[in-house]
Image (tube, rainbow, N blue to C red; front, side, top):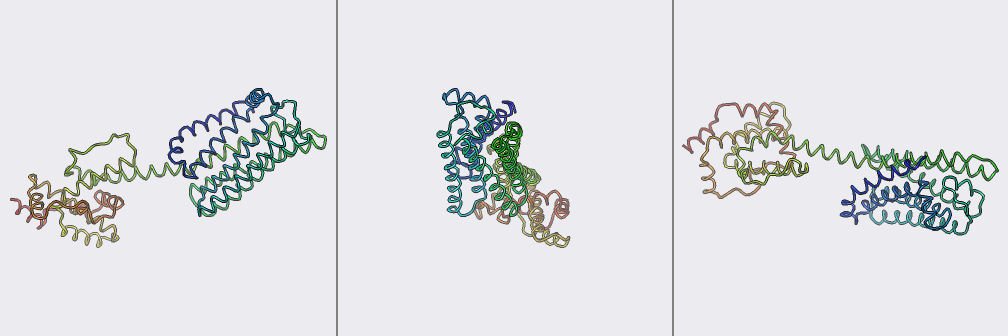
Length: 408
């Protein structure tokens, strides 16, 4: 593997970390957010410091041959611990249990890192080795133990991550399950990575030479495994974000018919602060809901419960469920109210209603809805319901005739 095989993934991780930095800063008190930030940072550092040019640079900077070895091994151990802690915080559960499990893994890999440094300090590795330190010093006291310890730590992390991910994957569905299974596959590469390294080291112990397994095959396995794991971590988050965005824009689009029906009668339309088209989808939906509610308030004096009752009965007769029939009845009443409002350009009914009862309380005009979901049902009924179409196209009802008599 050349230097670009290390630096390109490190740069990609750095860009992702920079993009997520504002959210990480705002939510740093959240254990899950902290775990994500630490994992991304450690993943990038592992790639940077494991690159042969960086290894040579660190050795030259410190003046200690092969000092990069314990540094890289400690970063790998910390990365393993961060992955385990992220899975623990991601899965959730009682806070005290989550904190206890996280502390155990952090403490365990902290001890491993300290032992790696101590073993390197006790050993003797005077000849700089950029790619084959594991096999070159396989028979050197203390350095040998350091190599075995970090390989065992990686193996334990790989097995533990697989067990945790598979257990959790059996309890969830959708993109989260897919992400967990991908993470498990990625960490499964730790096992063949450690196996190839161990095989090369044991071969050295027995006087044979299988260094190619350690210098060529093992780094490739580690790189593939880490990148597959990164996909597993990012997939559920990215797909959830895309799904939420799709749902929001779908709600915005479905509210369109009701918004257009009420747009011309919105009492505040001329004075409303309009948001830009590039504003977040959530804000666009909020604006559209606000416009609809303003229109409802403007139509309140024109709402006719008799129209709604007749439409509700017609919808039930046509086979609609009670919830759907209620949405169709509400839509029919809104349509009739829009017609009545158009027939009263001077707003005499509104003036009469305000004089008699005062302005309607906020929400009274649409007290029959339970929120955005009912507004969406009404909007769909405006476009698709035969009951609403009939209410829109038929001749004025007796109540509408009374309205004309009152306002003439």
